[in-house]
Image (cartoon, rainbow over all chains, first blue to last red; front, side, top):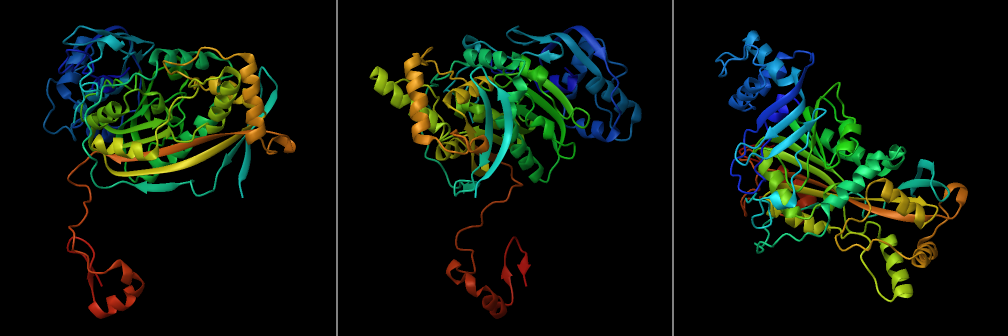
Length: 135
Length: 364
């Protein structure tokens, strides 16, 4: 699982969880894989991601690699920053470990790089038959 | 004329069989139904647990572990390809796309980097996910074990949701649609294919008639499917706009009813209703097979042999999360040409010189 995916995962569907984001990352096996660097893709992704969640996740697994704690002003043209984000977003791969809900402490296992986000029926937040998602 | 195309031949436990895929070119093929206006506010209902999600997960796992799993991909592969063409029809590059109920990657393998930057493949079955093939070289692919009823995504984080033939096993379809809408970014897209309406009506009728005759009563052996009007209403209720729903009918010919049931099991599409009967007496099955052959049998099998058809009605859904940038209908009374005079449009344009067609734009 890449940190790009971790950045959008939440446990809001759990009973009694109001935010459930970001999930705490506990990694037991990490693999760093080479991915072709594409500055255009990375600079397009930066405004779309939650940067503080990305920074915290990278810090928790010890793979900051010079990533600053906030987005730099000239990020589109700052190659060093873009390369650091590229490494953290796309090259760091969590092979095993778990994702932990920050509110309930419920753990979702990561096995062979695939997070298992299944929940039991009794854990689900059911409000008005729409699992807590009311428009 | 119906196009007949041989798509799979395999040895089943019963007999050597060949299935044929026929795309119906009748009226029901590719009908487009546009929904507009508002839906009456229905009272919020409690979720009815019709389907056993755990049983469905086990069925899918068992199907995925079959050494011949690829043999049963023909239907989902075909519909997945048709769905992927609809993604290419949208002239936009989507950032983060979620393939919900991806199976063995029936849509994912056709996705191009010109349409999608990052693909998250989700399925209830971990084994299916491991087997799923995405366009890894071109598109950044990730995998997640996810239940379609409980989506683990942050609100406003996904550019597009795609789902290929998996939402017909969801208990709380309104809730799932609402979750999808919530997770989509503004002007995000939801594209799905679902079995609906008259899917497997031949098998349903044959089993019902055989059970009535042999056992004096009947049980549900085929899960209920949504009708096109219901799906339109549910999508509107979940706040999707600019809805387009079109239907497609796929008819596959099999040597007998037993091959139909065998292939459904191989696809992981066995009955998962909570009130399902766990077994059927052999005499009822034999009677159902005879009824199926008598009422629906044809000579469209391999080399003109007898065959039985199985119909699959597929609905393709397209909806968008509302956004101020989306086109809106003009106010009533702003039209300048009556539809009954449309055949005289050339004369009207000569007479008036110009007709307003948009926001300040003039047609000269």
